[in-house]
Every structure is written in C-alpha cells, then in structure tokens.
Amino acid sequence: MDKMNIAVLGLGTEGKHAVKSLLDYGNHVYASDLNKDINLSEFDLEDLDIDLGLHDKTKINAADAIVLSPGLWHTNLAKNIKNGNKLISDIITAHKSIFTIAVTGTNGKTTTCYMLHDILEKSGLNVLLGGNAGGGFEGYTQLILEASENKYDVMIVEVCDMTLDYASYVFNIDMVIVTNIGYDHMDYHVSLENYKKSVCKFLKGKKQAILNGKDSLLMECADCAYNTFLFDLNHRELKLFGEYNQENASGAFKAAELLGIYPKFINKVLSSFNNVEGRTISINFTNSQIIIGKTDNSNAVAAVFNEAKMDVIIIGTPRKNERHRYNILKEVKNAKPDLVVLFPGLDNTTEVAKEILETEGYTGKICILDEVSKVVELALNCTKKYKNIFIGGNGQKKIMSIQNTLNEISKSIKNY
Image 1 (cartoon, rainbow, N blue to C red):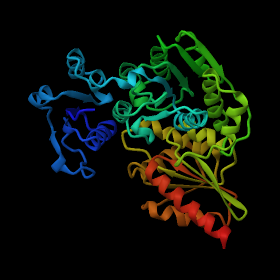
Image 2 (image 1 turned 180 degrees about the vertical axis):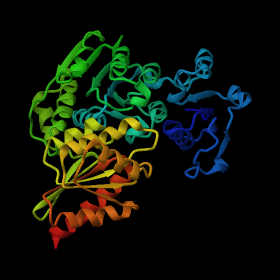
Image 3 (image 1 turned 90 degrees about the vertical axis):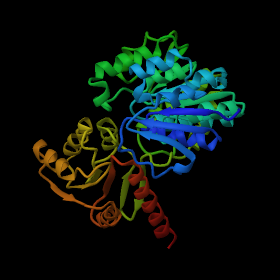
Image 4 (image 1 turned 180 degrees about the horizontal axis):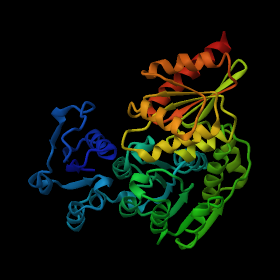
C-alpha cells in the first residue's frame, strides 16, 4: 500500500488507535478533535499534525483519505465526508473481499472471537482478528490496513454495540454472531428496546445471523437477517471459569460448524482453549479462591455471582457520567457478601458508590481503598478468612494488572 496523507477526526479510543496504526504503517496523519482536553502523552507529537478544539477543513480536504471516529458517525460532518467518498474504507478496500464474521453483543464478544479464531486457524485457514478498540483490540482502522498488506481467508471483527451502523458501512459482513443483549451503554441506547432495534437493523441484509437462543430480546430479532441460526447452552469440556463461557463456546461452535468444520474437531480445539487476558478467571489459594476479571456492567457481574456465593466483593468504580453502570452495585447488594471493598476504577467515585450501596439497603461492612495498589494485599489477607473473593468492575487495565500480580503470587506459593 502506498503511503498516504490521512485525516483522523475524533480522538476517542478508536481515533487514538487509528492514529497509532496509521503512523505504524508509515502514513502522514492529521488528527483533530473539538475537545481541547485530550491526553496525547502516548504520541510523539513530532510525527503528528494535530488540532484540538477545531477541525481544519483545509487539511481535511487535502487528505487522501479520512478516518472518522464512530462517535461522529451520525453527525452532519460525517454526512458530508461520506458523500465525498473519502472515508478510508472507500479508498482502501481489500478488506471488503474477505469473508467477514462480525461478533457483537453486551458480554462475551472477545472470548467468542478468540475461540472462533482458534478453531478456524487450527483448521488451516489464515485468519485476521481485531476490531473494537474498547474491547482490547487495535481498532477498526488496523483491520483495514492489515488486510491491504497481507492475504487472509477469513476476518473476524469484534463490533462494539455503539458502533453497529459504523461497522455495517465499513465492512462487508457475511456472518454475524450476537452473544446477548444486556444492560450496558444505556447512556447511548437509552433503553433495551432501542438496543434491540439497533441489533435488528444491524442484522438486516446479512446472509447469516447466529443468535443466543437463551436471550429473549435476541429472539425478537430472529427474523431480521436472511438466515438465522440459534445456539443454546451445550456443556462441553472447557478450561474456562463460568457457565457463560459455555454460551460463548456454543456461539463459536455454531459459526465454525456452518463453515463446514467437523464438530469433533471444534470441540477438541475448544477443550484446550485458554482464557483471554483480563477476562474472568479463578485463582486458587489455600482453602480459598479469588475470582477476578473484567465485569463492567450489571449483567456481567450477575453472571459471575451466579457461579458461587461471594464472601468478599472488591469493585472498581465507574466514571462519574456512567450512571447506568452503577447498577453493578445493585447486583453486589443482592449477592449479600460479608464485605464490600471499593477502589477507584475508571474514576474515583468510591464515595458515590458507597452511598448507592447504603441506599440500596446493603448492611454489611464497606471498605474504601484510595489506591489500587492496596487491592492485592487486601485480597490476599481475605483469603485467610474467606472462601470466595471477587475482584471486578470498571477499569480494565487496573484489573488486568491486579490479575497478573495475583497469578504470579499464586504460582510462587505452589512452587514453594
């Protein structure tokens, strides 16, 4: 691919990942955002032409192609750019000729993506995996660039539920897996009914849709695609924690089966599949276990709490403006742990979280930690008294760091 002058409009999570990918591939980048308060510490500003507080139309018009942040997709700015046929997905199009599987839903997207990738790759296919930067991948632009550089048989795209319209435009999607519809991103969807309508719109025109048959809202979307296939909970041998991972495996199984891969081979691959970094695992200590992983919405937390009675729940708190995510605390209260520990997750909203817990009627002990660094020590102390300790909530990078530290400590104890 020839090096290009590319404009990136919007510097949220996806925009920042797009800038990084474009620079890594040797392109010249102009980036802009109307917000003046953007943290740019991850970039070498000598490599980047950037404006904060404005979009320079002269520089945008001079660009060979434009990357538009998904958050700007429904704006007038986006409409004008789309009409000009200068979006990067209209200029660089190799990705559109690859058989593409989109995986979306509230929970389980990343694990399902990796499971399916494992199956397809071990069956001999060359598979490109990526997508949703908020889910831990390198963003949608990275897929477009990589597909133009190398040959792939299949592309698996994790699609955030807030970017369904964006992904429908950017990718030629042949198959869709929807894991579930849950109570997340309600600041965007407003209601579950709106979320369901967005999913149905996303499925329209798609050749194959694979839906979770246990999800009643998804069942209302069963007629939205040309062909719909359901997966249900089939218990199979897995190394992963949690019943919900059986659902993730069933979704990946159904997709692989439709692609002609033998069921016996699929189950063999799934039986050896290891947990995706940062997702929920159980770490064993003497007479106790610490269950820890990314659980940033009430449905995800409830699914974990269904697995075991939690004696201690340690929760990273949400951002101030993410009011819908405070519903996590209702699930904490319903779980009736002896102790709840609050630590700063994406924001230090621990006092707000404490007040909500008390308002909801939680009567157990509440402890507030002012530093994430104290979580490991407290959790280890709890293993001396309690059987099940849970660590989760908001702040994926922080939880992953805690998870890695506890894993190493557990291994060192076993090897002692």
